[in-house]
Length: 125
Image (tube, rainbow, N blue to C red; front, side, top):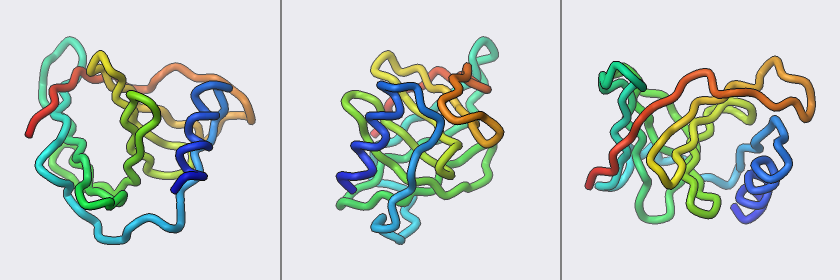
C-alpha cells in the first residue's frame, strides 16, 4: 500500500500518466463506510456520482455512476482522495470539494491532460 501511495504522489508531482493498482488491496468490494462524496455535474447540479470512503482498512470500493456500480481502488495523497479504476483512469477529489475524472489510456508517457469531466461534491456521513 505504501508503494501505491508513493506512486500516486509522484504522479501528481511529476504530472505522469499512470497510477499503479496495488495487488495487496482488500478484495471485499465494499460500498464503503458511512462517509461518501456525493457529486453533481458542474453547471447542471444533477447528482451523478457517489464515491464511498472505505472503512476498516479496505481499499476496494463500489463507485456509483448514474446508478451503475464500478469497482475502484481508494487511496489518499495528502488532502486529495483518489478512486482508481485502472492504472490510467481515475477520479480525484481535491480539498475544495471539486472532483475531476481523468483518462490516460491513450496518452503518451508523461503527457498531461485536462479532466474529461468535472464535478462538485459534498461530503456525507
